[in-house]
Length: 189
Image 1 (cartoon, rainbow, N blue to C red):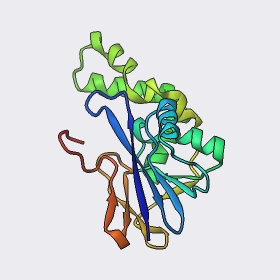
Image 2 (image 1 turned 135 degrees about the vertical axis):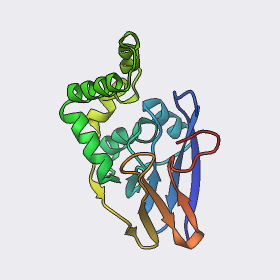
Image 3 (image 1 turned 180 degrees about the vertical axis):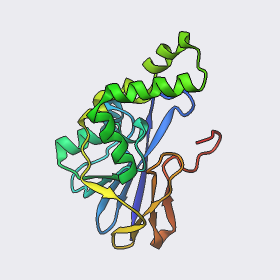
């Protein structure tokens, strides 16, 4: 039997305003996504989320509004973090050389005809560069590669699209799917 609690936390993304963090308790305890920042973490604690006996943090994908508090949970409580291998490769490349990442963004903008007068503004507002410290601090303990059972009755499903390494979490017993941003109402992922 699984117990599922949803925690809604505010995020600084104009199109969404909030993110969902799920607490799944069964044979093991899993946190699905973590919100955007330390403010998300503080809000989760204020809502009564306990980090005791959490076995995994499952990140659906690499975007900041899903991984922002993971490093703090990992550092303070020693909770292993799982994410898709393709997204981990991208985060590790950013960590290895933030300058190369920035330069590649500028090149993509130039190739697509973005006026040079606004490229600096766009770079300054890019979610990765704006939250680079978060990306630099997180470590990944579990690299998800494909459709795999992570604990009995709980499967990690590879569903690239929203990001190259997006994963959903599926619990057969309750037919519950935690899809991150793979399925969104009202905006295009």
